Length: 119
Image 1 (cartoon, rainbow, N blue to C red):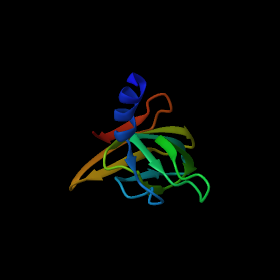
Image 2: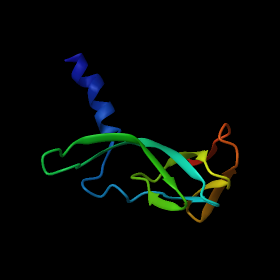
Image 3: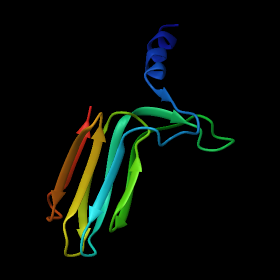
């Protein structure tokens, strides 16, 4: 009985999204002169419908790699993203906007990732 009482609050702390997994904060990576990058974003735990058969998938981070510019949205209205330059000559930037406030960070050094976030 005690286990059920302790486990219940953790399940309620997750936001249930259904199939709408891109309804949160927008993010955008810009990379100049052919720079490549890797992106890791973290956010409060969410459950979502990954497929018809998997209705309760769980996530609290996304990871993406790319070259040039790319954008997307987090599944939650809070979170943070870190972008790391993985190659190329140009700079790599990450930007996020929440309630009209923008955060932007830029890096040219693969050893120094750029990070932004709203929590």
